[in-house]
Image (cartoon, rainbow, N blue to C red; front, side):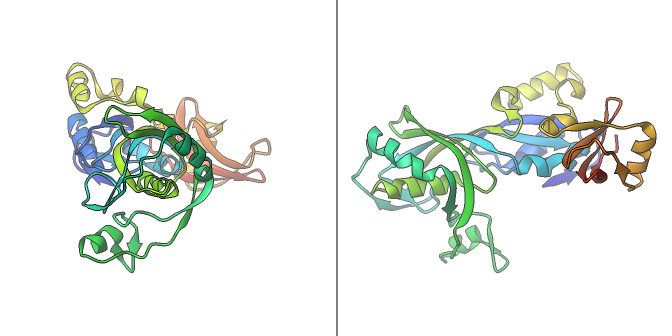
Length: 298
């Protein structure tokens, strides 16, 4: 989602290291306010009880958000085995307990069945709509949302050993739509016990890693001593995995007018069109015909 207001026209990305307790929308509002940016939005919701990488697009960077939302993501999380909660995380009420706490050998043996394309039922407390109502609204009202299993892709899932609290700690790389809470619930059930997510941190979203993330405190300190351009990553940072095609000024004008280009040497698929050092558009090529998908006003 994006937010507009009066302010500066700033274009690019701020990779926020979102703290616990802050919603994604609140994070956008704080970054937008600190930089006095006119337009801002986040690429991929991160729950208040999770910390880590929250890419925030400013200005024209918001046009590249679909590519970030659809990209792979990395998480490090802990599962508290032996206790199930209504929300599948530590916020909910305890709904079941078990004396079974799986050992490392059992956990390692169970992981392969959750790697690859799997069918996953989203948590009852999720933003999925059922007959126009959010599942979490139904759950909070005492109803049990009847959610269907959906195919999701888990690229990597590893056991990292116990965390400081003695909970099982894991790493996961996954595709769009994968719920860590559902995986924790299902993994626990496969081990003949129950469990919930005790801690969750997102360490990567597409090309954005936690090493490039900045906390709100550091953002405020840096902002007072540097211009916004020193903090904001270029718009094209989000598109590093998309092939670039250099075009002329005349071709750039045609694209901005909504016309197509022909390039026999261009490969089929998504492209980022560059004129000089300026990104012009995200485009798609099919059989040499290039049509724009998102045009940047830069």
